[in-house]
Image 1 (spheres, rainbow, N blue to C red):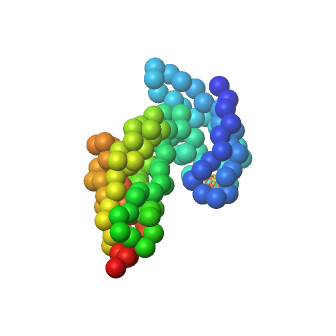
Image 2 (cartoon, rainbow, N blue to C red):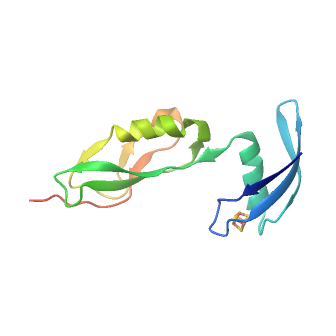
Length: 125
Ligand code: SF4
């Protein structure tokens, strides 16, 4: 089988054409072209077997200099759990001051990724 992917590992966004075979639930990537580095083949193999994505979003801040603080996951999670994770993130709010790097949700949905704040927000006095 042949499929084309856009690698999202780095900003180059290589268009990769991959030939692969499926055997008994396993996927064997036999050839790739269009990738500028070996990570492209790893990305394709991951996409075919266990596609993952990360999330960058924001949460409400009470009494802060800004109404929102940016957040992100520390590791990609299975693509089919993105909406579930977004629902968990929507439930979050924090009280200022908040510091970048603070863990808001440890091990979100048991998926091995933390939700962390990525922006300092000072309190409004
Ligand atoms: S194949 Fe390599 S260079 Fe191309 S987008 Fe992926 S990581 Fe970047």
